[in-house]
Structure formats: structure tokens, C-alpha cells
Image (tube, rainbow, N blue to C red):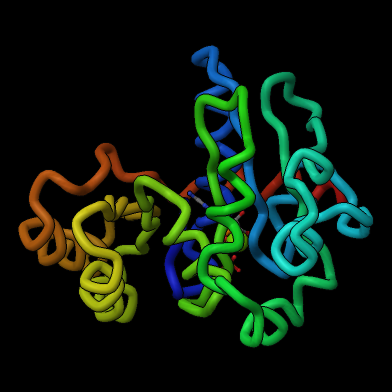
Length: 209
Ligand SMILES: Nc1ncnc2c1ncn2[C@@H]1O[C@H](COP(=O)(O)OP(=O)(O)OP(=O)(O)O)[C@@H](O)[C@H]1O
Ligand SMILES: [Mg+2]
């Protein structure tokens, strides 16, 4: 799963890019969009209003296979999100096994080498569902002071399977300092090289609009 309770740090961009990269290496990949914002869904060119989206899987126990859609990238499939997910955190509360709904659903998925879950920017029940379902966590982190404040707490919540990725670093002094202070606390657990801040990532979407 790709998670960080901080918003706008590159979770969705990482989920889509990682999925596409694994497909290039010959894997079959399923991306599960767990975020009510549905950015992974629109980012992969899928409409946000499909009837069989992740909401039905989590709340109505609909089989996951009925919600899988193919994307334009052969080998990369998606379980889309949509506007009905806005109430999912609250609607999950009274349900039996509310933390294990995604884990249960993913048990019936066959034929994928990797499943990537794109999480919302919170540590609520949706993220807890992802934590209960996955083997490892990728945490995109911006090298900035406030981002580092929450990182220690997030890592202690998740435990030893977390892999913080120090991303979107720039060469300016505060970023270099933040990165230098974080890396020794998490030895061997950060991803190299850091993802640089690139304007080309924003350009195609701006043009599409
Ligand atoms: N390496 C990068 N360089 C420049 N811009 C980037 C980079 N990675 C992501 N972005 C941009 O930053 C913005 C936020 O990225 P993204 O939506 O992936 O973050 P997020 O953590 O999923 O956000 P949210 O918490 O809202 O789900 C997007 O406009 C994206 O294009
Ligand atoms: Mg996102």
C-alpha cells in the first residue's frame, strides 16, 4: 500500500508510477483506489461514477472481481473509487469485521503479481483496512519539517514493515537538512534515489484541462 496521513505528498503518483513500472517488468498489477478523491481512478483515465466500484466491495461485500476494470495499460487493472466513498469511513463503523473488509475481498484475487492500494490522506478505517490487507507499506515523504514530525508516529503505528521513501527532495538547504536528519533514524529503510520534484508531472494534466 502507499500511505501517508499527510496530503499531497505523492501517494497516488507513486501508486500509478510503481504499477506501470512493474507492468513494464512483466508483472500483472492491480491498483485498488481506496481514496474518496478517486485520483488514481481519474489518473488512469477511468470515470469516477462506475456502479461497481470499491464502495460495493467494502460496504456491500460485492466480489472484488466484479469491480475490476482494465486500464489503457495492458496488464494494469484497477478497482476504481467514486463519490459514494465519501461516506465509507462512517458507514464502515457499525459493520462486522470493519477493519478486515479489504483483506477478505483481496483473498479471492488471483492472477496478479502485485496489488497496490492507494490510500486517502488519513489514518481512518479505510487506511486501517489497507494496513490489515498488505505485506508492506510505501510512505512517500516530502523532505520538510512538518512532514518529518508525523513520520515517526506513522512508523510506530505501522511497525517494521514500513518503507519510508524520501521523495520530492530538492537541492535547497532546508530539504537537504530534513533528509539528513531523517535518514539515520531509519537506516536501510529509505528508497534511493529520492524522487526529484519535476514539473513535467504536472504539465500533461494541466494541458488536458
Ligand atoms: N515528483 C514530483 N514532482 C512534482 N510534482 C509531483 C511529484 N509527485 C507528485 N507531484 C504532484 O503533486 C501533487 C500531489 O500528488 P499526489 O496526488 O500524487 O499526492 P497524494 O499524496 O496522492 O495526494 P492526496 O493526499 O490528496 O491523495 C499532484 O499535482 C502531482 O502531480
Ligand atoms: Mg492521492
